[in-house]
Image 1: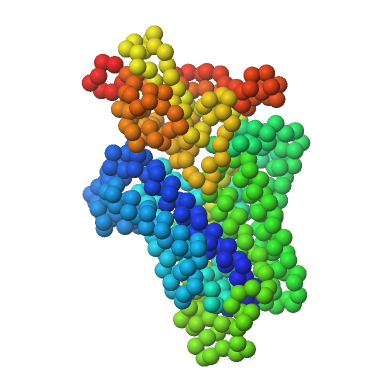
Image 2: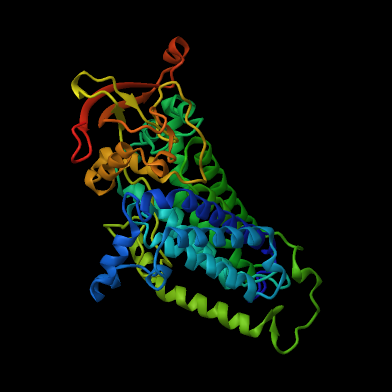
Length: 497
């Protein structure tokens, strides 16, 4: 740190700008592939209906977060255009091209990504109701003020990234301590690898590790999320304390965060949550001798301070002041008895509260969707639909999808936890009965190869990972037992099956 300029954080800026842009690219690709069948004009929860509802009265309109579709009529074609523009702009920022110009150019690029993706999230309803959506939005907003390659990154913006990472990690740690007893008696991770929303290829191996290892996992998690975050701020002491020690402490704290998040990447599929946390952790790693300051003149002209133009310093200082004002609710929430998890306190989703898995489910209940072409459902042979990410086929090893987000599969996990079935699941079953091609593309396997079934039903099963002996004997990854029929047999209104 050197006053207004974070001269040792050029490497951090490069990782932040390119990493956040890469995550925006993934987010726009995810929306391009999934938004229309889920939320498009003929989707499960059509966004035009939400927009019409919001436009019906000023009070309702105020409940809707900012979106370009308030002023530009929504259509699936416009959604595709927005996604492709987001993909193209993200790719240029990943390549570092706007960063070669004045700082206002990458600022405009990231603000356009922020506004464009917020326009999607604001009308995404349940399918976009995840904490990592607001995390990506906030990270994109802050990335807009990191500047360009010909000047050092602003100190205040680097510190704001530390504050974001602190809220993300410490908030998650406090949610767990205040949450289920399993986090306090160290048993949480004896269940979590098996019951998490979307297991990964190594989740079963992690689950089968000894109980003592899982207890150490929980202790390590508490240390990484409740103790380490305070050390993320140590590099700022470099303004007053000479020597490498403050920067080294911050780098070690970042390394611990990166290590714990990498373990989560290897053992699960949490969209871009863990990847974003890893990228943000690099904000605390200073590497001297890299960047524009290495070749900077000995003294600045009058319109420059610490190698940065005065107007740019004024803008970044204004952003910092804005964050001081906006951060009070999030700071208070961290120490509140009834802590909110993944909450936004303003319409622009800045200075949010974060947290995840305050409680851990003890058993895995899966909703399996089945259909048949037989006329009599009572004597029918039923066939299962296969999903891309969630468990189904007992012999199939879970795949790695993160940082890509399979939104339908994630919401299927929430169904047994009490999500209202009529909200989106009943329309989903109706689309299967219609053999809607866009909906079927969201699935891994359609047992009818595009033909319409006569009947559909939803059945609940309890799933658990196979033991090593069960795997050796039958080659299975999962073992399941049937519970009950949740919905059905059902067919479309007006049809006799």
